[in-house]
Image (cartoon, rainbow, N blue to C red; front, side, top):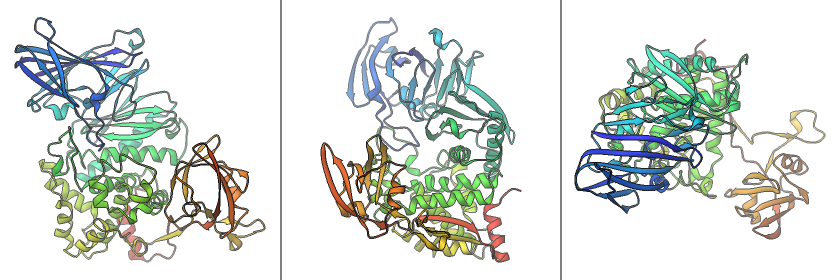
Length: 600
C-alpha cells in the first residue's frame, strides 16, 4: 500500500505539499513524476514545477535525495518506512494543471503524485488535509476518486486501485456550488467554482438530457457508478479534459444562461457542446482506447495514428447529441455543422498534412502551434470530424439499412471498450470494412492517408440538405439596393490579433495577397492606404476597393518602419452554409430524420 498526503501549503506562494509514504521501502527507491496527462498529447514535464524535494525515514531523519533525470528522484535510505516529500508550485489554472490561490485549489494527479518505480499497480490511499489558512475556512472537496473516510466537507482519505486510476481523478477544493441530478439511475453532479450568475438548475436539466441520450446510445448500464462535471467559470476561457468518471471544464461567464433566459443562444450551445464532447469521451478514449495507450507510458510520447478516430469522431458527435437530445433544433445543428466545416476549409494545411500524420505528430505539431501551422498542418479534431461526417452519410446510403457510424461505434464499444481490449492501429478501419465492404478502403486511403476533402455536397443532397460555399459575406456596393449588385468580399490573406497599435500578423496564408506583398508573420500592420487599421475598421476600409486594386500598407517589422504594395483579391469561398432543401424528396427526408434523430 502506498500512502499520499496532500496539503494546501501556502495559498500566497501557490504551493502544494505532497508526501508519498512507503512502509516497506528498500534501501534505494526511485520516484517518478509523469511528463504528460492523458487526453492532452504534449510533454508538459510536470517535474519542472517542483520547488523542493526531501525524504525522511521512520525516525524523521533526513534521507539523501538526488535527481537522476528530468522527472525521477532517487532516495538513499536504510530500508523500512520512507516519506518522500515534494513542494510543488501550482499556478496553472488550465484543465491540465494544478492551481492554488486564496480563492480555490485544484489539481490533476500527474501534477502532484509521484510513483515508486515498479509499484505502479499497487493500491493507494490519498489523504487530503483541510487547509489551516483562514481564507480556506469554507472550502470543500469535490472529486470522483473513491472515498474511504472523509468529513462533511470532503477532507479525509480516498483510495485507488493503482496509479493509473489515481491520476485520472482531479480534485476541486474551494467554496464551490454543487447541483446533483440523476441520469438513468446514475448519480451525476455539476460542480461550479468561480464568480457567476448562471441558472445552474437549467444547466443541470440540459446536461441530464445530453447524458441520457449518450448512455442510451452506447447501452445501459453506464460504465460508471457516478459522474461529475467540474466547471471553472472565468471572464474569458474555454477548455475541457476528460476523465473516466468526470470531466474538467473551463467556461466563460457569458456562456452560461441566467435565470429567465429563453432559448439556447450560441454562447450556451458552446458550453453544452464542450460538455457533450467530454462526456462522450467517457466511453470513447477512456474505455475504448488505442492499444498504444494500454498502458499509458507517461514519461515519453505515446504515438498513435488513431487520434482522428478518438478526437475527430467525438467532435462530430458532440453537436449531434445536442440535437438528438432536443437541446437545439435541426436548423441550429446545421448552422453549427456549417461553422465546423468552414474551419477545415479555411486551413490550407489540410492540403499538405494527412489525418494519419496529424494524429501521429500531435505531440510536436498540434500541441506546439507556430505561425506557419495553418499552412502546413491540419487538426485531427476538425478534419477528423469532417471525415466522420462523410463516413456516417456514406454508410447510411448503403442498402444495409442498419449501417451507420452509430452502429460502428456501438460495435467498437462491444468488442473493445466494454471488455478492456485496446483498438489496434488498423482496428477501426477493419471494423468498418467488415460490415460495409472492402470498397471503403479507398475512402480511408483518400481521406486519412491521402489529402482529399470528401465530396460532401452530393452526400448532403441525398439527405435533403443544400451545401452552399461562399466568401463569408457579400458586401454591397455603395449604391446597391439589392443583392444582385453586391460586390465580393475582399481579403488580405493573413490572420491577425488586434493590438492597440494595429493588427499583429499571426499567420501569412499561403497563396494570399499578404504573402505576395512580402508581409511576414509577426509584422505589425499600422495602415492600409494611409488609413489606420483595427479589427473593426478594416472591413470599412476594404469596402472602398475592388478585386485587383493595389493599396499601400504601412507596417513595423520589429523596430523598422516599412511600406509595401498589396493587390487585393476576392476572398476564397471557404465558408460553408447548410440549409434544409425545400424540394427534398421523401426518401431524403427520411434519411435526414434517421440521421439527426431530432427530438420534438
